[in-house]
Image (cartoon, rainbow, N blue to C red):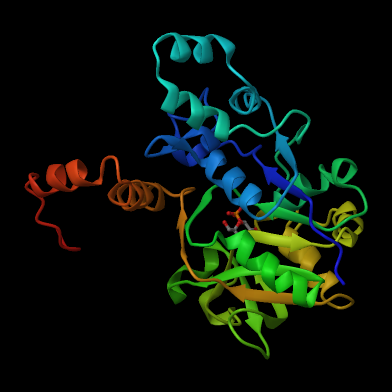
Length: 296
Ligand code: G1P
């Protein structure tokens, strides 16, 4: 039987340079899709999958993330005074319980592998989930929950993957697919940001992982990879020699909210799906003079 996954790590130290000036003083993880910050989507997904301990690897200028997961008494009492009980209930529902969150800092932006390594003392010697909050999913059940189902059968390490346009492979980690169904197939190798000609498939690592703690030893060697950064994919490519890696081509779709196009698309898709605003939003869109075609 595999050891239960209780802890999730959220790397939130990135500078968000692609969203300047919005991210000059505000963390990119607080950008909203409709009215929920990106980080809230990742936390919701983790809690849905049964995660009990939320570890945030933050950096300078990120303390508002900590505040977001704390109570806000002034706001709560104002909502109560005004009788806005629904809004109050929603706010409380989003809040992790006392003691469920931990925060540490990545002092220098040395790459995703380094950010994950910064969580080693808080995670300890147990398997953990890793969620990159830029990546927001439309999926039911949530992607991490789907991956947990695979993990219960296979143990080891599990990576969520989705198909990407072959010309975009060089923006992501790409896996080589071995035997097995979409719900859990063998991963035989992986490479970070390959050139299209070198990509082993068009299945990209979309920011959801279940990892064994041995990854920390490999990350501690801190070898630099693609882009001069300490890459998680490189450490996993070493771990695969001794541990099992399973790919899950989950049911659902990712929006890469680290890119402007992905972020804007997510806002449209999520707004169209929100019962409280979808009708009005649809009407507003229909009223615009949008002759949408991909040429201009
Ligand atoms: C990271 C990972 C990459 C993964 C991507 C998903 O890259 O290194 O393997 O495909 O996240 O967003 P980054 O976006 O930090 O360049």
